[in-house]
Amino acid sequence: MCTLVCAQDDFNLPNNKDYTKINFKLINNLIVFPVEVNGVELSFLLDSGVSKPILFNIINLTDSLLVNNVERIYLRGLGADGEIEALRSRENFLKVGDAININQDIYVVFDNSINFTPRLGVDVHGIIGYDIFKDFVVEINYRSKFIKLFKHSEYKYKNCRKCESFDMILNRNKPYIDAYAEIDTIKTPVKLLIDTGSSDALWLFEDHEKQILPPNEKYFHDFLGKGLSGNIHGKRSRVNSFSLGDFHLENVNVAYPDSASISHARKFEERNGSISGDLLKRFNIVVDYKNLKVTLKKNSNFRKPFFYNKSGIVLEQYGVRVIKELGEKKYIDSYGRENRDNIIVDFSQTFHYSLKPSYTIVELREGSPAERAGLEIGDVILSINNKGTHKMTLQEATLYFCEEDKKLIKLEVERKGIIKTFSFRLESLL
Image (cartoon, rainbow, N blue to C red; front, side, top):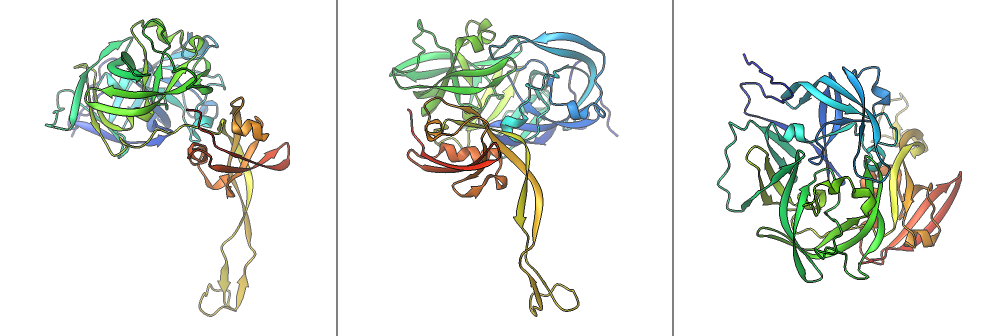
C-alpha cells in the first residue's frame, strides 16, 4: 500500500517511488512527451524556458477537457506581435509518469495561430518546464529518449569521470549557464538560457560592445521560428567554436534573432542568448534546480555535424490529402481461399484510398534556390526526388533540404489544383 502527500503547487511521487521514467519523442530536436491534464492525456513540449504550463490547440478537446477557476490575463513571449490573451486556470490535476500535482495553474490560449502541431507534424497541446524542474532532479537521456524524475532526497550522483558539472543560476524561474563562443577568432564569454524548447543549436543576441556579431558577409537572413508573440526572423551564421567547460565543438550553427522579437527576453540584461536542442541533444543531462547544478555527459550525437536548411523552404503540415495506393496482390484458389502456391486467380490491380499528411510551403527565403526555381508559398509538396511525401514524416521531408551543397532537389507540387514540377540545387551560404 502506498500513499501520496501533495503540497500546494508541487508535483509529488508516491512514497514507494524514488523516481518515474517517461519515454519521449525527439521531433526536430524537441522533447514531446505525454502529460495528463484533468484526466485527458495530451502531448506537451518540455520547455525549460517557460515558467508556467501553457495549453493550446484544444478546440477539438473542449468536450472532454475541463479547466477550472479561470480568469482572463495576457501573456508575452518571443516574437514582435505583442501580448496574447489567455485564461489562467487554477486547481488543475496534472500527471507526468507517476508524478502528480493536484493544484496546478495552467494558462490556456485559444488563439488558433498559437499551435506548434503544423511545424512539428505531430500533435502538441502545450508546453511545461519550471513546474517539473523545480520539484525533481531531472535526467534527460537524449540518446535513448527518456526522462527520469527523481525525488531530491533519493537522487545519488554517480562517480562519472566523463561527466562535468556546471553551476547555473535561475532568473524568473529560468536556468542560465556560462559558456564561451569564438566568433571571428575572438573568444567571448556568454551567459545562455538552457532552452529545451528551441530546436536550433545556439542563439546569440547581437551586442556591439561585447563584439557578439555575425562575421562580415558570413550570414544570411532567415525565418528562425515561431514564439508566443509571433514569427521570429533573424540572421543565421556559424561560430568558429563553442565551449562548455572541457566540452568543445567546432563550426556550430548560430542564429541572431532580430531585436524586436527578443525585447521581452532581454529583460534579463546579463543574458547573451540560448543553448538549445541541437546542442543539448549531444549530451545526456542531469538538471538539479535545488542545488543550482547541471551535469553533462556527451553521447553518440556529440560529433555529428551541424546541418541547416539550404533550400529556403519552410514546410508545415496542413491537414490531409486523399492518396490512391496500389493494394497488395491477392492470390486465391477456386474456393476463394488465399493460396500462393497453387494460383488460380491473380487480382493484380487493387487499390485503396487513405488520408495522408499534406505538407505546404509556409515560408520561402528571399533569393533562395527554391524561390529562384519558381516555388511559391502555398505550394503543396507531393514528392521529393521521386519519393511521395505521403510516405514521410514532416521531419523526414525537411531533411532533404539539409543535405550536402549542390545536391539536386526535384519537387512535384500542387498549386491551385495544378500539378507542377521544379528542380534546384542546394546552396551553402556559410
